[in-house]
Length: 532
Image (cartoon, rainbow, N blue to C red; front, side, top):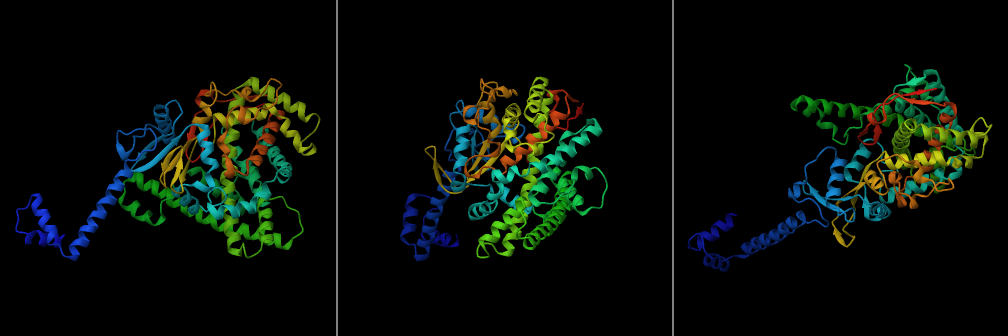
């Protein structure tokens, strides 16, 4: 800038006019040419940045430009309203910007499946989510990307084989019976979801770690048991479900200078980090204990997910898996299984029994089929595991629950690189919002109603998702949830035993009073049941 001032001072022309600019160019020295070139290049780059800032590959709201539309209620509902308005009847994606960032909203099931199929190569997790997972020590199968995901998948996929999952039926059944004994003793349960969380936590601990915690018996009592204290710590962290990816060092500053409501929230984040640190320490201890157990008992057969993964890692050798890598991956997936395997399964069970208890006709039908399939058998462990798949009515209810009330109604991924999609250029970093719940409700007639019969053909056989509606709650493509079979098995075992034991389920709240709470996952507001 000083060089330009001196240059214009030497031209002896009025401070305006085209002739002055031309004469100024004539007396430019070398540094002035470089400066002018830099200005031109900078101008071109600025123009390109501005052009990208106003680039929209698909129809959408433009009223506020790069600032994006105002949020109406929740983020999911806002996106659904915008998609409904601009998608031309669901035939086109919708693009918008929020604070300058390009966002593509998808509400068509085929579009969502296409993105998920291309997930490992073209799309990645949102960086904020990845940071969250790392902060929470949960960068396992669900959050890992690229080579890290491929290595973890190779180690864990054998543990999720059908044969290994079916061998877990006795564990699931034993814990389910313990929960039903609690329900029998209580008679009326005010918060059913809480008890389902105790069950799924017990099951995931025993199936993933091979350790019996007996959380159902100890969760509601004071105890000094280290394992129970550990699980209560995890449950407290899950219950918060706050934005914990913010950095801990800022806590003291915010608490001192921010308004009271913000400092209180920051204090919650500080507590979350403290709990995460304790969980991280205890998880590492559990992982090392299981690794030592496998080394001391190399021939012992174990069906736990962790021990199966340890054996795969040992087989591949130290060149692929160092000791530090093993501990880090196993530790990350312990937290992943607790969140993905416990929280989501408990939420699905809650929604399932909310719908079944509010539909006496389907409660009776499902119970009659359970009695018919089990016959005189006392438990599922005494029957072939494949008999569970004969519960077509209960499976239809489960599919309809996953369609109407998915535990993850909105999912996000990012374009990992510049790519072409649906004939449009998609810049790297573009966020794709996948309206999972919206797509499943719009894919069928009367999509806002719970109608399990849509999943059954005229002969009573279960229809496939391709002929009814894609249930995308478990994902799709190469990154589909590997624990889907285990989750469905756990739900079927508990639901069948519960229906068999209790002929009557009386809800304490009317059906329309039980609304969804949407945070990290979606789950019903606390509701109660009377078991008789």
